[in-house]
Image 1 (cartoon, helix red, strand yellow):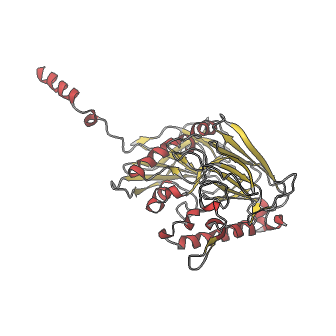
Image 2: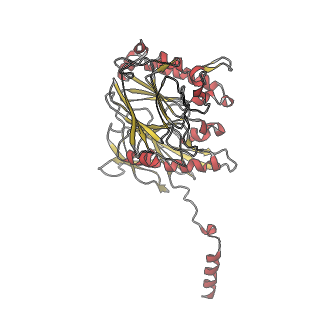
Amino acid sequence: MAVVHAVWILLSLAPLSVFCIPPIWTQPEQVHLSYPGVPGSMLVTWTTFSKTDSRVEYGLLGSKLFEMNAKGEATLFVDSGKEKRKMFIHRVTLTGLRPAASYAYHCGSDEGWSDIFFFTALNDSSSFSPKFALYGDLGNENPQSLARLQKETQLGMYDVILHIGDFAYDMHEDNARIGDEFMKQIQSIAAYVPYMTCPGNHEATYNFSNYRNRFSMPGQTESLWYSWNLGSAHVVSLSTEVYFYLEFGPELLFKQYEWLKKDLEEANRPENRAARPWIITMGHRPMYCSDDDQDDCTKFDSYVRLGRNDTKPVAPGLEELFYRYGVDVELWAHEHTYERLWPVYRDKVRNGSREQPYVNPKAPVHIITGSAGCREKTDAFNPSPKDWSAFRSRDYGYTRMQVVNASHLYLEQVSDDQYGKVIDSIWVVKDRHGFSAWM
């Protein structure tokens, strides 16, 4: 008895960390959804720290729980930090889902299961009116918009989330533990609706490896660029970073440009443009902005807008390409502000009319939404903006968008500083789409 008592005293005096229960390496975490672009499908992605099976058990909400199951596979991701931390990224694609039907699911294996989540399968009909929340530059420090987005997502207000670059600040930090924490933070959003992304400058470390490995977007370009259809919209995600990180391979810039050209050509085939008349792009760094920080978009010769002449051959910009193929709305982030522009092309305002600038506009409509909240706070504005700047706000917040039908699209900005107040809104109305709409 005295021996037992002595052992108990020694244990009580020992450092607590020695006796902490180790992590359950087979327990799923960082669960998030994405849309593979194929009607009736949903892709579930999660992380474990030991290799296990990759399974999703699911069923229609309100019916027998987990009556269906699907298997996938796990890939090893080794972070490039000093510790060379290993994690397994699991991916399982669910197919044959009923459009607009709601499902409950969990993911993992018999060695560990996630919590139960639910989602609604996307409706592939071109008459579907999808609702989006969109923002960029959300960190795991100072994530001002996160709580409201969590609640609104779980209330069913959104069909899709668009995160337009810059995650966690930064995903690679502390040997990618910051990435782990961020992915766990957004699980309360991303496990319920498709969380569609594009890379930003804060993902550049180790050649964007944390971004490439953690997310699961459509296509074969490791989530760097891709496109997909939803409702009456064709949505294109691109990397603006190919213009700035040439050390990772300038060929990526030209490869993406050729891909964009082919994708937009296909989207503009008469039968395709009739079915999906809205073309919406999302990329991190804007072509235009009026922030006072000397970023690329503050310069007349913006790389993203006009291209680079220090490459061989000269790298083309995106403004002419998007104008030629009749891109309707261009979504950006990077600037830690919200800014709505008048329709603009070649640095000139091209409103539909003085009274109704967004009714049959003569150029694309640009929205910058990079104020969701991060450790770098919000940016300052240039006190003398150009004529194309229509509305600006330094409030923390995010944007909502609904593609209502073939002719009407609605956008509004939510302020977190003002407790969820809508501080700006517009209707974009178009009788025609495509290049001819600018005439």
